[in-house]
Length: 104
Image 1 (tube, rainbow, N blue to C red):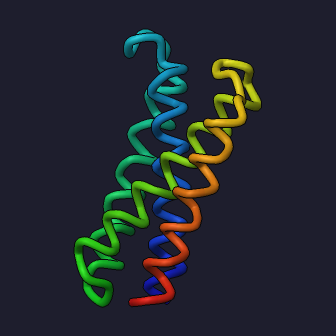
Image 2 (cartoon, rainbow, N blue to C red):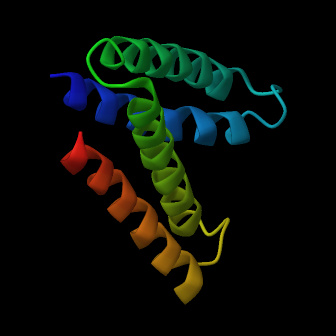
């Protein structure tokens, strides 16, 4: 269950990062609400998962999931250009996150 919560919390990290960007410097209220709710839930989930998963592993997985999904969202919304190097680095990042799960 801790791993499921951690993965969901990492996904929420990508949500709050995208909402933060969409808030236009905290000028738009809907993205601000999405940011606040998703950030709170993401942090609570991370803290809950760290009761059973070592802190370093939990944090690395949380950040890795959030960063990967945030970059993929940037590709989908055309805010970032998907290059071969970026895609390969994301594959490496995902492989590292999976590796941490395997050895934990």
